[in-house]
Length: 341
Image 1 (cartoon, rainbow, N blue to C red):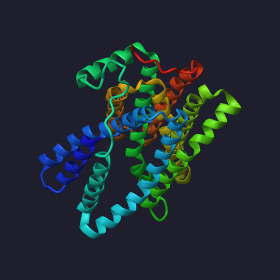
Image 2 (cartoon, rainbow, N blue to C red):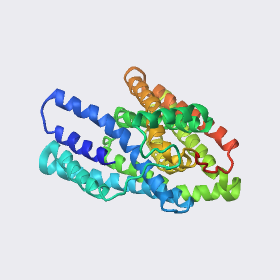
Image 3 (cartoon, helix red, strand yellow):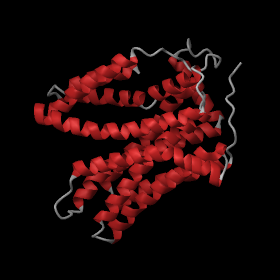
């Protein structure tokens, strides 16, 4: 987590230089920092949660509050970035990012280090290579861990492809008065916040009205991915068959962002359920590889395929993720956390 903060400070500082080589270096470092962002913090939080003996039920609540906070903070960050750009030109938001990341670094420096389960092979003293090789062995030997990672790659890959698509798609439709992209962005971020709020009520519904508590997270994830698939099918069909469907497409974009806010805490809960603490960081990074492959394929598709075909591809990714998730739900039972001797 400390390395992530330091990298982000350096990356945003490199944005001050008018040099292609330096900016390219910043993008390479950005790829490393992104992997850390989506693995190190979650691994630390999950391990620290159990280290302090908090109830397992609180993990879902924490992930839900993170999703709510992410959406709300994104809206505020957009407003702050616009203010800084007006005040300091295009470099202003990067200077603001340096200040905020420095504040985050100061907060992280107060955290205690943890290494996962101490009984799980002495990971507090093992090498990074050993942790990754052990994590890979677990992925190969445990089909549930493999499916969790594959679902993550498919769903997040579809989401990132959508992120590349929403602005050019709306602009290409030329609605009367143009597209207020700032307002649309705020609406999308608000949808993420609402999705995070909906997580716990949805899990409660599935655990009391549909199935058992043990399958609630799996069924909630299946519902989320199916809804995301259906929402991306809307622009795939509308853009192919109709020229006047701006409102329908915009609503579908809001729905998929709602699904992102909903699936974030669900996915975190499932990872904490199936992936041992000692392997969290390694396995999360292992599955960044297929995720990045999906993202590269999706972004390439945005350059060579028509928009409606790309949205059909994204819908298919979410549908496959939903089917794999259903196999987890059908075979789900109470997972006891077994530590190695």
